[in-house]
Length: 149
Image (cartoon, rainbow, N blue to C red; front, top):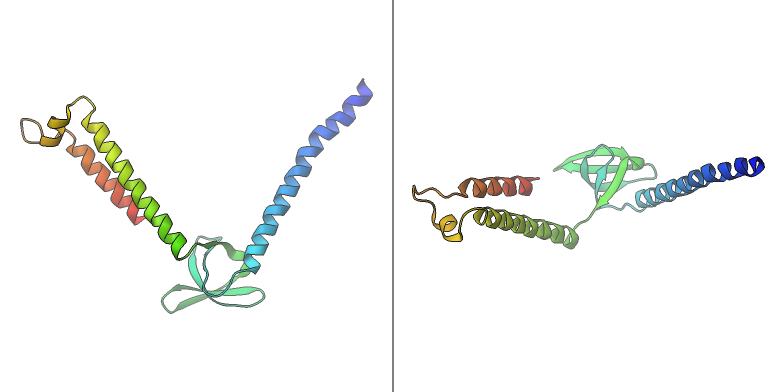
């Protein structure tokens, strides 16, 4: 029995290590392929979080335009990812806006039905202030902040 325990323990410890190394190699290959396939005009993000547009490349470096007429040179290895452009970026921003509107509508509706009736929430209370005005203001502020980000 003791003779089988040691080999079984080795297998249990080595198999996860082997699988982890394989996964890391696949991820490293995907990143290397992405960095090799970068082309002029791509919008990229560097590993330090800088956004830029590729204006020139060579074997080891890329020139990124980070502002109008401001070009910096980076190693290809510093490119973390290629950002979507055109239709994909517009679809993402449209989805974000619709999510903001859905969240805002749900929050105000939830506040209106939370202990008050709909007519009181819509028309305001006896003193002229709306019982959900604070909720509406915070939702609008939150939506505005999300749009800026």
